[in-house]
Amino acid sequence: MASSPLPPSAIGRPRDAALDANVLRAAMELLGEGGLAAVTMDAVAQRAGAGKASLYRRWKSKDELLADALTLCSPIDVDVDTGSLRDDLVGLYAHYYGIGNHVMQAAIQEMLGNVRQHLAWVEKVAPERLTARRAKAHALIERAVARGEIHPPADMDLLLDLLPAMVLYQYNTRHQKVTRQSIARFIDGLVMPLARGGRDSAKASNG
Image (tube, rainbow, N blue to C red; front, side, top):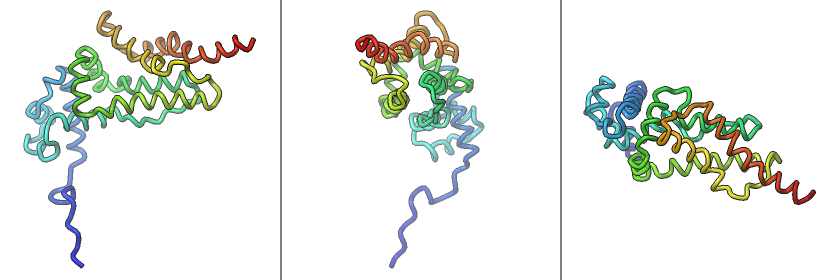
């Protein structure tokens, strides 16, 4: 019986994980400094100290490269479980907005300032990314419902939209950068009162 041919990934020289990480970090740095237009294969290769040909052997385009860079710097499937919906949401959104990762945080600020261009790029290259982020927040809320912390929200979409909407509004109208403190303030002042509304309404109707 003839042996099966090797898959394309098994042919040729193995990938250099350190080089890959360096290139992806360089792409995120350029994104944070100058937006999507600043991220070219030439610029990334120069920043990373790599040959342009080596980038094209790994990624067919800058879109593929940036998609991998986002996945590396801000993975979607982050594990957050503090036992408290409030703290879970603070931790999740702090991760998604790059808090504690200055490269990712700079890139996020640039994206917030050019949201139309950014969303058009995400919808073209990684449309599942926004859906997966929203689903993760949704799962945290459902978990809080299951453990009896809150009642099922009357308007789940509104609950999920509140924090991203406030972050975007304050950045673009008041030039306020997103921080862990601002995330916590939005959650404490807006998200949690709405999340607890179902429980409070139920108590009032039963009383």
